[in-house]
Length: 304
Ligand SMILES: [Mg+2]
Image (cartoon, rainbow, N blue to C red; front, side, top):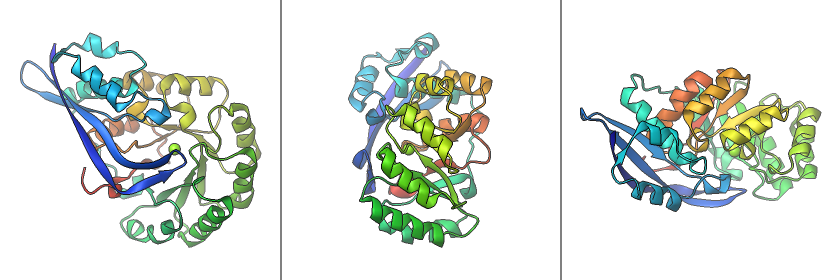
């Protein structure tokens, strides 16, 4: 039996984040603590992303409020799949009680999220000097022609030892996705195009991934473990983006990923360092070692 406590937090983005899902101004989440009988405390983080299909902040808060200050490991391992961010947080807090290492990736192991739009052309230089070699930009926000021109400029500007990830958040059509891929397919710096089409366009996504050299990655399609399993068994041979904080039980995720061969990129949901630590511990065991971790996001906040 552990003593359970929690506190909600809100962190505004320095500049609101523009994606195809809209404008995001403030990260809301909940830090959870489990304290054992000897006074040791393990921390975890609930960082929901409801537009990806996780529970909402208010559902997670309601769950914490009804827990009555006590919780057992049995309860934690049997939380319903409708609470994936809570599953992650509480299992992470349990693991944190006995964790010995705190992984801290070097800049070269991180993918740095650049601002959306033309400003991306002026924001890669400083992180590059700090050792960052993988960058990411959100697309499918402004008109196609404008975005294509900016991204082509960026690809030409980035030094040859850099990689670029593009994330459409499901905001392209077959026609616009083809235009992106035709135009950029010869750039070896383009590491992958993430979720060009929405999850419901599964068959077209699979066909698209067979047509061009540029690898495609699924993100929105594989937000939870059951979706990841469905896409894997459905024959996806490209990259899978794992947002550990909303994927559900880390133990079950680990079990699946260690018994199947998947090309995995771990990626942030703009959680605090508490959630990140738990995700890094998982990524250490599961992430494809040649792919940067999508956690280069601290510059989006004043402090976390
Ligand atoms: Mg994404």
